[in-house]
Amino acid sequence: MIILAATPIGNLGDASRRLVDALESTAVIAAEDTRTTQRLLAALGVVNRPRLIALHDHNEKERAPELVELARNEDVLVLSDAGMPTVSDPGYGLVAAAAAAGVAVTAIPGPSAVLTALALSGLPTDRFTFEGFAPRKQGERTTWLRALAAEPRTMVFFEAPTRVAVTLADMAAAFGDERRAALCRELTKLHEEIARGTLAELVAWADGGVRGEVVVVVGGAEPRGVAFPDAVTQVLELVRSGTRLKEAAAEVSAHTGHSSRELYQAALAVRG
Image (cartoon, rainbow, N blue to C red):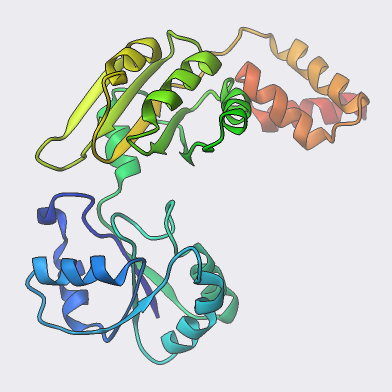
């Protein structure tokens, strides 16, 4: 089978017993960076010397069929450089190919930068969305963030330390200076740090530079107080202008906080 295994995001002490046992016994490991995996094996005192196959963003499409065929007869352990494979890391294409081919896929759960940052942020955790890395180009990033401005759920982002100050400034412009946020750096490591405050405060905090691995957590937008009947009317107006009902309900839901499903059903009933 295919085994997705979570590796430490910083502190080696977070390596689970199951992970170490798998590293000791598996004959084939598909790794995002084989050099990183070799260092992990050495750091954990693993004496097993498995076959290492590179599996990264640039070769996953071509490599997936080979790994799926291998997994029909033996276990293939899949590792990213840190955290859980497939979450902003290679693995999704492999899992999809395995599922289509009827090859079993399981996981050895463990560290996750997304969930660790969310838990430490002090922001609502009941509903959240993971948005990954912001676009690098200024114009694309601005458009992308504006589209998220009305998102009611807590949002989790990854960002490079060299770009985080600019991205925070763009977030403040798109979401508003007073939106609550948290910047989490070097999670589980010796110099772990969590900075909490408004986006404006975090922009000032990051102005002197930020080092290490970074996760940014931003609070969701407050509902704008649009009554449900008025929201349904907005959905119908979008439909009349050519938007499909499902997309119209989702769009109005994003900026009113009303359930997309309830808006869809109510608009459908009005339309008859």
